[in-house]
Image (cartoon, rainbow, N blue to C red; front, side):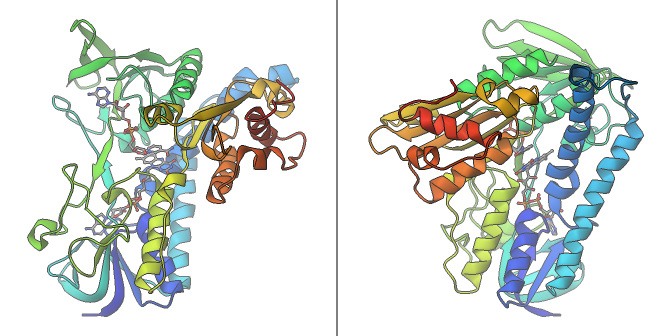
Length: 462
Ligand code: FAD
Ligand code: NAI
């Protein structure tokens, strides 16, 4: 039996970041991970492999659509799928090995195996029980499925199977027009699959600013993705090589069917807490199975904390990381704080989508007086040179004080551009603060400044 100040269960972005910060703050730290490699869902089967495939397929799309226009002629690239998968696996391995290195550097004990909590202050891994002053649960999440749909990870797959298909399918049906559905749907559409997205609601990416969601759907349609909206999937039947998807349209209850070689079920994720022994300990959970915590990530059991996808809030790697750092500070006797009002969200489609703060719909619901500053990328010289004039920046600011309340970007590098607004919001910036800041020319960031100018006396290039 070993004794630690902190034992963290789960080595994903929440757990591994927390372990590093705990060690940096002088706490004797161990991290238990059941997988062979560290990095959790994000590095192994989530953010990183999906972004590798998005990057590779985006390059292919660029070569097919824009190269000739720029005077780049010659044999256009074709897809070597096994090589693309091995590139993706290499990227994953480089990143997971990087975390191993960081654990050694910070003298964190990595325990291989599935952990459980037999009693407060104790963590069991295989036959060994270890003592911990504090325990942090960072066990993440897993895909959900639907009644009448059995996942086999071959024909009917979750994102995990979709990141490692043996070949590019001819026809793919994606159930759910959320983040996973649109990102991985984009990958396969660019690689030549006929992709149909079936969504229960009438808009894609629920919760996103309505104007952005509409623009995103329209752009993806132009790229060849088909959408069937307002449709409830009833069942998926499979033969050895094919699937038949039955759905009902909500507007008239009519029943329809689709064929596919692969069906991607992307209807959300749920906390993964199996095998921890939470019920026996009496840990409080929400009706959605999330571990209930207070504002300092403490559960109702003294010394037991939880972070990341396993608790409430957006299921995002950076939210888990921020909680990981903050809970480490709490355990080290410091303040520990996460500003949940300024957590950006990015969809890595092309164009990218990024948002932070309130949507226009939320401000309307709250009855807030707000103003909108918008600027299209068509007015940005750099974007035009990149054939990336589609989309816009939209800043929402308080009508009286000009304080930024939210920002929504669809366009090139939106996921990078959003952080200027995030920093501004952390400092309580007004739109005018962004507008008065000199931005280098020609950059995409000028579009953000122009949207800020549009909150005041007006944008220059629109
Ligand atoms: P996880 O990353 O799920 O890590 C939990 C770890 O705990 C796992 O490795 C698991 O094996 C381990 N574990 C569980 N139980 C035990 C146990 N009892 N004992 C030992 N170990 C255990 N988010 C973004 O912000 N950006 C993106 O681009 C993005 N892309 C994504 C793409 C896909 C396809 C998916 C599925 C998700 C994506 N996400 C993205 C979401 C992101 O992956 C999660 O929000 C993030 O990984 C949550 O971190 P976590 O540390 O809470 O949990
Ligand atoms: P999601 O919650 O984003 O979207 C699920 C979609 O499925 C919704 O549009 C929902 O209306 C729809 N749906 C639910 N039931 C349905 C049904 N029966 N028939 C048809 N449609 C149905 O979930 P998703 O895409 O699975 O992603 C899970 C999590 O992973 C998200 O919370 C997201 O935060 C995270 N993620 C983040 C990424 C990023 O930050 N870029 C990338 C990928 C995942």
